[in-house]
Length: 372
Image (tube, rainbow, N blue to C red; front, side, top):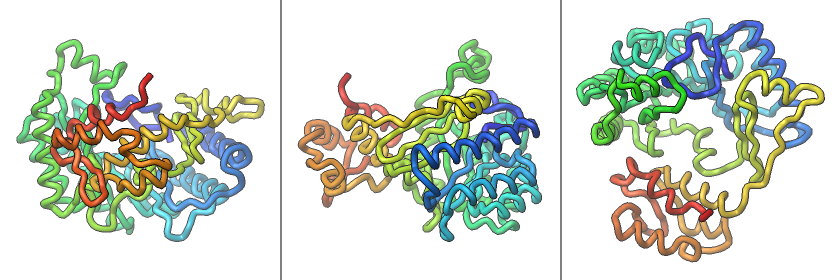
């Protein structure tokens, strides 16, 4: 859902300012894409056990648009009774009316973009809410009866001190979320925030301080009862994000909307990033993206690094069952070296990251990439 009420300077996702008429066109395009993919890709009306409505800012939609969206999804898919249905929201647009509309459309899990609880940091990020709006949105979500509540945070912001991040963590955890997602800031090329850092107007985030922030995050979240189950995600028992686990386990997932990426039976497709290009692709006579087979080595690399993001890692039996050969037959030298270096743990038939390796995991994952 590519619309936002305001555009944040750090964000590189496909998005544009909300406009009621444009949002109606997006819903028209969604209906066209569901019809096309139902014929050409997944066939018919598939069963869904998870659904994630991301953005953009889905809470920017009007109540009537949420009603229409709920009908489109119910008509296009068999959403199972126990399905996890998540919608993202920003605190300033998450009103009681928006919560009611989401619940009526079947949403049972809410994900709120808090990002920080420091007013100056929120202004730097060009967020239009303050800490009070985060607390208000949490209260609205609880009163509306959402079964699970996630809060998003960003750390390692330009100029962010250890004390500032500790204060944000304390305030967020005091709100009692069921799930916490916290990501190290990436300075995305072409974003206003990246330009300000490049020009010297804002300080470049410090890698050592970023690592200290991450270690504090893990300690404080787990002390509050939110166990780390993926490098950047923490949950109370029973509240891990089932939808995102599909990504990390490289299970099938369908994709709808501008810039959405899907994977179905080892065939991948990526939708055009802009609203207009996406609408054109699924219009009569348009050129919708054709799913392409993922080469075996690339698929295997994805399987390894995505599962290593999970705290549980993967079992050697799982690898052998998925790929028809033992991990040592493919990456034995790499695994042995990383175990000897202390980055990997290999115990009781399972392979997982050592906790000390999580913050530098991208460099370790790259060692499993297929040679070019």
